[in-house]
Each structure stands twice: as structure tokens, then as C-alpha cells.
Amino acid sequence: MSREHPTRAAEAFFGRRRGKALRPRQAEALETVLPALRLDPDGPQLTDISRAFGDAYASYRLEIGFGGGEHLLFRARENPRTGFIGVEPFVNGLAKCLASLKAEPLANIRLYDDDATRLLDWLPAASLDHVDLLYPDPWPKKRHWKRRFVSNVNLDRIARVLKPGGRFCFASDIDSYVNWTLLHCRRHPAFDWSAGRAVDWQRPFDDWPGTRYEAKALREGRVPAYLTFLRG
Image (cartoon, rainbow, N blue to C red):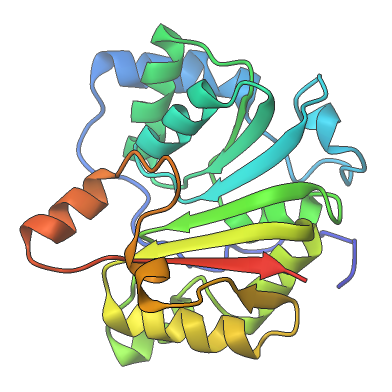
């Protein structure tokens, strides 16, 4: 894949950008906190991931589509020696996370509020130890499947930025998307599925805090799956 990253249109792996009106403290956090934490993939190509943070961390982790930031914030608090990058184009979720960061700043978090593919193309090769894609939009109608984030080209992107032995973790309660992801990842030469038995993908990830999407799925009787793929 080329290291060039010309300005291009978003690839529409996400749906709407805004919901209901923001609460005042969320709107304030969007204006005052985001500028200090926002990464700029339209700037010069990043060659050293530590420069995105202004400091070096022992490891680096990316979450694509963090919703309101509950999982991202939990992981960042629990792992202060890891640098976390969160991507969320939905303004209401982003603002909720920023309001939390205004109340409790975390130096090891950076954010991006647009198409995650721009960020993946901008990050240095083999710079991440872990990538999370948790409860992504399933695009359940067959005519929309091309908008699912898991695709051959995006797995190429994820493989490029992961270190050898790095992890790509995927969670969903939508059976068709779980099967879709398994098929795509098992066909991809860079990824090995770590599961050895059924319980391995039925059991949540280590130190899993849960998410509001997971809680909704369980309330509605859907069983989540937790897939871990290792970068070869």
C-alpha cells in the first residue's frame, strides 16, 4: 500500500454524524478539549507514533468506533503505560468521551473524529500492538454489506499497522457480521484466529469491562462473540 495519503472522501463505513443536540458541557468539551487531543492525518505522514503523543509509551492501541468512550477510557485508566488512539465520527459519542476527559484528563489518549481509514493510512507501519473493533455498525441489509468495516482492503490496512504478534479484536452480537469477519480474516494471510475451542470466542476478552452495546444485546437476547486474530 502506498504511503501517500491524498485528501479523499470518507469511505462511509459509519452512518449518521450527529444525533440530538449536545448538552452544554459536551458542547464545551468538543470546543475546548478536542483540539488538544485530535490527530491530523491530513498533515505530514507520521513516521514515529510517539510523536502523536509527545511522549513514548511501552505499547500502542487503537479503538475504531469507540461510541461514548466507555471501553476506551477504562482501558486507558487501567494501562497508563499504553498510548491509546480512539476513532469516532459520531459527534454525540465523541462529545460524551470528551466531557469525561475534561473531568478526568488522561495523557495517554489521542482522538480522531473522521474516517478511520485515513488514520490507518497515516500511522507508521508496525506501530500498533493492538486494534479493537467492538460492536461496529453491522449494516445488516445485504445491499449495505460493502459498507462493513471488515473488508479485504481494511484488513490490509490493519495488518500494515500491527506489529508481528499484534492483536486484532472484534466483538459483535450480529451473527452474520461475526461469520463475515471470520471468513474475511481466515482468508487473509496476515491473520491467524487464536480460538482453539468454542468457549474461546464465547468468552469476553481479558479484563473486559463490557459496553453499553453489549448490555443492549444481552437484554434483547442476542449472544455476543469475541474474536481475536493474531498478526503473523
